[in-house]
Length: 391
Image (tube, rainbow, N blue to C red):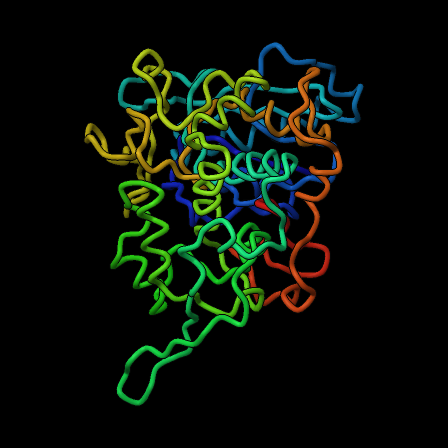
């Protein structure tokens, strides 16, 4: 079951947020506030968040119980009542037909503004599958192949080193990469890059060089070229800036900015009219306040009233393919349903079925499917690997 959550929540969602559980039913999904790093493509039921002019049906017509759907409503409302979520919008669809959708709580607690179906949310890591689709569009155009060395397209990465511990004097030891990371390894988080969120020496360099605070994607690439990989390419798995690197690739291979390429090739064709990398002035009133939990458990707005990159008030100079987009629940439903349909929605084909299958197939070697690698409750293991930007 594909499950995607948009809320203005009790936790601050970041690119490093743990994905929701997918094996313990609805309750475990909605207990989590963070954006998932994987969009699971394999079955027909979709738990997403809101839609308007799309096909609908009665729950029983596609195998659901109207009575038991009240359990979903009660779980979400309980989160609201206990001030663990400010608000949420849910939709349940199967076989491309929406059978249940509701709004809960508020998108702005201070102003008592109720949550609405057209509220705009920060997509965070749910940007990753959209960047993956952008890459696969270019794949279909013959612009790249998964086994090509990343340096074929990014020469700055031709001489990446690999962290190999410390010598007796405490100096970091570096060795040559056994092979240059491939595009497929970058897209499957197995190239050796990371996010800078751990306490490792390499991640410390991400902090020191402020990789994710670069002025633009070219500057980000130049910084990454000076930081060693965490492990030999293909020999490990670590949630990483790979999808931000892909954003640079999209720009270089297409000649367009990442936001413009996604607009022209994904958002407009699918009718995702409120999806992008910033919220224009005429839509700001619909932008849900982002809440974070304080030490005592109550919710507080994140960066309230401050002019920071997280305000999304203008087109970013460094658009993040890993976590920088904003969207509505209806828009993201359209995107996810397109993938569930094998690359097409309402007569608009974005990808071929074969390309979607390639994207959603495991690209990790068996040696990594041991349960040693993963993030949150999503552990790489037999039957649960990683594809190209998706689980």
